[in-house]
Length: 249
Image (cartoon, rainbow, N blue to C red; front, side, top):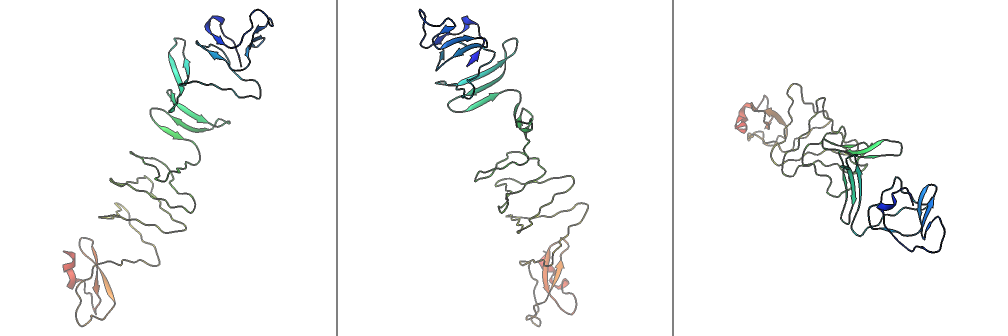
């Protein structure tokens, strides 16, 4: 470990030679042209001030404490600007902004008082219960891993998806299912709603009353009430929707 420090601002506890020994230091402490060099484990009882602390080339550098290790960055008025605390329960970083970057300088993650930014190309959530967002989320794309299901759910409140230029929901290799307890509404204020499929099934539509003469007939007419409700009426020589208008009540 190398460092430049005022001699009066550190205390060192280790095996030292005072009466006999080399003239370039005491025991495990050596004075070199690059600063001070410590061999082995050392304990500092008071603050240590150094411009640079590094290990021997090829060896790791360890900081050990019975409680926590705190790194403070101060300004010229000794006011703490940033702080990193590694304790027995958590690792805390205190600063105006926190950033994680790659070796090339690409931003992977940043957080401040206004927003949290994930700069990676993909954000994966591996928890079995997914991710809970107590407020809104803004993203251009939400998708599951290949061959995995994607589920968007709001157990107690509403789930709202908004986009100024449109929302696209696509299941390329499977089915799309929307389930609700009360009402499922498809609404277009200025355009139209298109159901484009070779088969469209509405299996649970209500049926109007049928006449005894055509009770064996399995052909029905699709009728629309003034309020938009759909129902089936047994087909006849002419339209039978008017006969079964009681379904619209």
